[in-house]
Amino acid sequence: MEDYLEQILELINTKGYARVADIAAGLGISQASVSHMVQRLDAEGLLNYEKYRGLLLTTAGETLARNIARRHEILTDFLHALGVDGETAHHDVEGMEHHISPQTLRAIEGLLEVLRANPELARRATLGPGAGGK
Image (cartoon, rainbow, N blue to C red):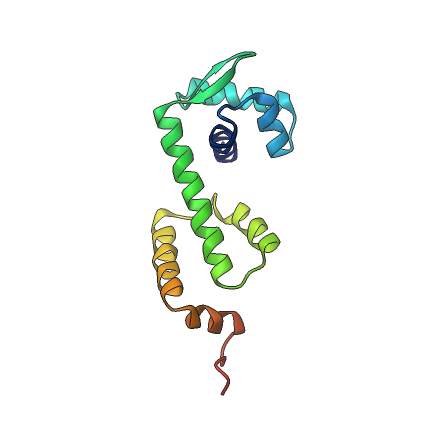
């Protein structure tokens, strides 16, 4: 469900609208699967869906989608700050983002701020224990 909401928000932000076909292409799944999930999200009040016309996120759906996107961004930025390559970070974030607690995410966000303010710490972290040239 989270991947759908994230994809819908991204499409709305980039194209101004989201259609079942665009969501399916973005997620690499069938339009039938997307239609089923879209109907479920509509029933849960997270979006308004009109068959053959497209969809819009409700206020609740947009809030949830923005939180999901922010979580994804924090985790991606954190892994990049540690020197993890883009492909690996993308793969790891896809698994991490659905299981991380708000408490852990806040801790990672705080650590990310420290790493951004002190790039030497991030560099040392990527080199492992005993790094620092001694």
